[in-house]
Image 1: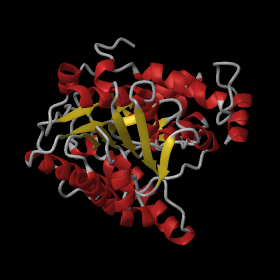
Image 2 (image 1 turned 60 degrees about the vertical axis):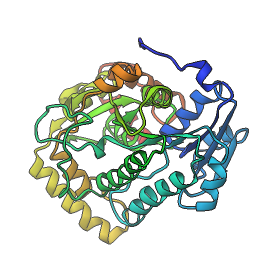
Image 3 (image 1 turned 90 degrees about the vertical axis):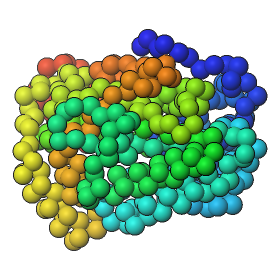
Image 4 (image 1 turned 180 degrees about the horizontal axis):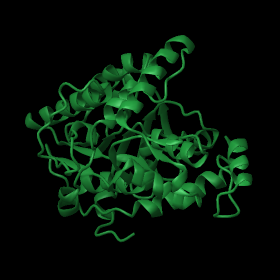
Length: 361
């Protein structure tokens, strides 16, 4: 990967930094970048479940607390020069939905109120706060938000929290927002949402490809984009940190190529069928109490194209991205190395490899 800029060592020298959500997928990659740069890196996040990540955090300045805990947030950001607010949650069903708006809005308010007067805050928003379109035309930071009536809680939770940040900037606070796309990459200890999807495809658990299109970005590139935003971003501005715009069919074809599988084993699902499956999943969830897949909110997302341009970030921050195929290759290798995925000796799909996939699942 070629990058037009690396972190400015002088900027980070003697800086005290806090990363909220530092135990999450993006947050942990942020922490890894910051450790050799800043004089102090403090993490505020929920206690992870993955033993490997728990072990990695033992030697670091890590406070396990909820972002809604006002006192914990105040103590975590005290005396910091830079705060990366990457804490949040994603929910599509059940109890997670009830908490999501509070976590994003109250959590963001807590960080803004506790932010030292001299500190800069980089708020991790989402491309969801930008919006989406019915065609494949990429949206930008200035595109009008047109999803007011879309019944997807995550979209409105992220939009509300970003609005709080931009309003604080108008009042003079040194804060800005970055809008990451759908994150993929290695070192996904807790297995993120896209990590789960990739594993399901590689294990043969996704026979039908959902409709729609997404923007996929390497989590390491997005983490670096956060650092560049802290160094060079303008207060009150937002920057899309995206990658490649792909149809879900194209993304699954790339997954198949990496795994050495024939892409002909998957069929594209029409939207009406995806909707029926989501309705069935919702009914099943009411009986079993387990999160449905797909959910009704997944189906609503699939009715749009979540495609974007990162030109502003490229021009103003020096943001650059690596190809999705390269990321998926490293991601696949990481899952195999950690034992979450069995290796396939031959790149030709056969009955034996399919049996291995069923055992691995």
